[in-house]
Length: 143
Image (cartoon, rainbow, N blue to C red; front, side):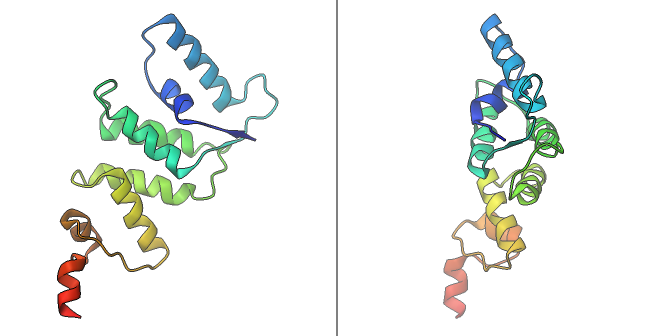
């Protein structure tokens, strides 16, 4: 099993501009396809996915939410990806694309709260609205 870091995802999901970047992309492709390694299974962590999204939205790469969601989801849903929270992570990515006022981390938090039937407590108006709850400071005044 291969544990994949942010840099490998970024190299795989971006267009190389230099020869070194082309080499990195080729190596990253090998990690995801397993070509020549004998083991094409891989995993990563939700934290790495958050960092990948952050990096791809920076001024250096300027990828749109839709492009990131399409490409990253395609990688994470490969049958060779074994990520314990994969379904929640993919759902969070998709939610993030439909709610432009939410950060990816907020989308992840919302999906986690819903999937585990937790009460979401937040002071963030946009997150509370997306979750269909009152902001915590307003909620606590009612209790």
